[in-house]
Image (tube, rainbow, N blue to C red; front, side, top):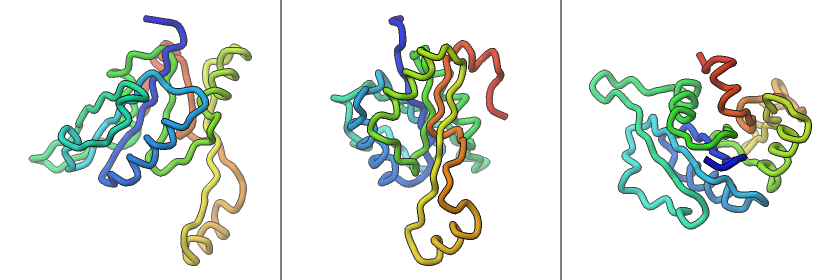
Length: 166
């Protein structure tokens, strides 16, 4: 396996449009990931969906849904599953409703390697898309960026040393 092989883990549930939007955003990164691992916890079967972007990076789709008990996996569990199926030694986490900056992978990888750190957290700034959500945003998160798992990067070896998501 080559050095600095980048896997992006995407937990997915239900909104195909959001999934396509994040793949489009990842395809526009200044440094492309080597692979995208989509962990499908929805009732949608993605195996026959034409989500495209195969020409930009290798896409692995793994489904995790207990149809009989109607129990989906949740984001933390999906991230753990995604890491287990990833080939990369650097793992990036993103969610389908997150919009990364164009240089997200390049800049985060640079910090991870140049500063010799084990983990770089994401930085999430919430946006409103309606008058009501704007009110909620003003009363809760405001206009401040918060450390988050979406947008984070970690060496795969360090992920397993630290312990998986609960």
